[in-house]
Length: 336
Image (cartoon, rainbow, N blue to C red; front, top):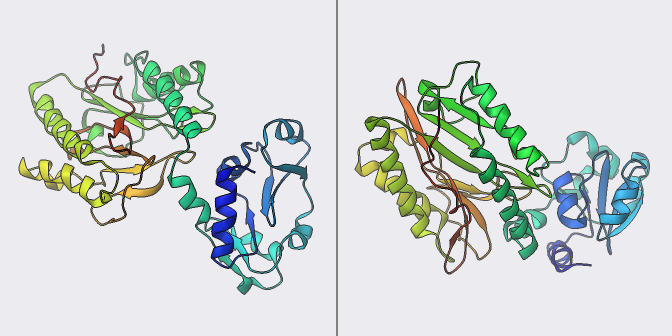
């Protein structure tokens, strides 16, 4: 059993749990090393056991770091669990009836969530590889057609460069559409500025990057403010710093230039197997950054009816915090 699993079991027992039922495929991947492609679940008792169906069994036996068995009927799950039972907070309510005859004995546990906040060396290496894939792929993007076409070509590029699948739905938002922080690509022909928010996956580990392509003095003015705000936030990232301090470092710069009302989201978030993990880098989160967390720093300015600019990089928290995406220029050239 690896160190992560030992710590999860220790944390569960110290919280008064005797067993835990795990269904989330990313949690299964985290604990076992195997990402299921079909129905599977994992039970933690005295030791973890991964239950998979026959479709996944051959690969699971090769990749899983824990014991693997054939999946059992849902009606038999309660026989594998004992005592005080922990579940994931995201577990589908329909599963609860299969876990115990007494729903009151079920409680959610954040033991895995807390463990996943701190990345291991192998997780950090997987994230570096996902960044390499994404960074190479954006330089091959085709902006000669619509936003949808540009997003599709970027996702295709990431796939052929080694990504499992996109870390999330790729955003290509141009012109006035860029003023929407979470715009959906449209059939509108691409125009400037162009906000591209994208991420690849390597061994299911994400990256999350945003670059904004600009071509006017007005766009450059806003870009420079966002870049200054991002630098202030990145310079604040350190072990022991509050998440809120990182957010406020970016927010204060944008406020000073008079665009505070147009910075409409938090400064960043953690990620790993999921694209959004704890902690969130927001002004009301006073949780402390710890060594080997990986967070995004992504301030933006979004002016309705005009345009928006966002710059996003991925940062490894350490005593000398490292911008993992530093090899990808913040201001990229493009051709329409």
